[in-house]
Length: 97
Image 1 (cartoon, rainbow, N blue to C red):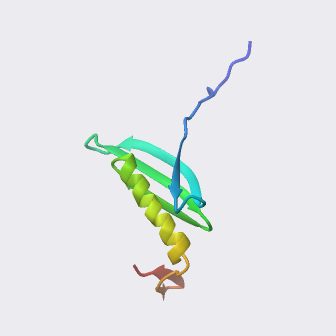
Image 2: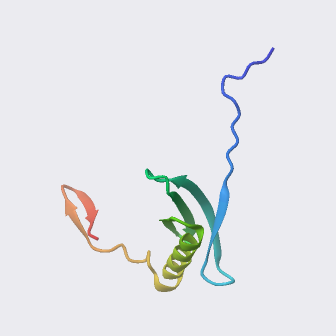
């Protein structure tokens, strides 16, 4: 008789889309959860071009709007093209926000 030590586990993944316009759409995953007070919490991470956008919100409509705006900022305004100002401390680079 064959026994499995680890049971097979299925994980359902929900896809989410960020859209700059009708020709530029990018897909990623959405994770749903609840915060400490029991309120809904949604998180999404999407790879756009050579960058990554991620956001969290309390509902899907707000999350989608934020991701669409960030997608436009990355593609049209070069959000990830400038690394920003950094300083060197003990041989390591630290970015200043």
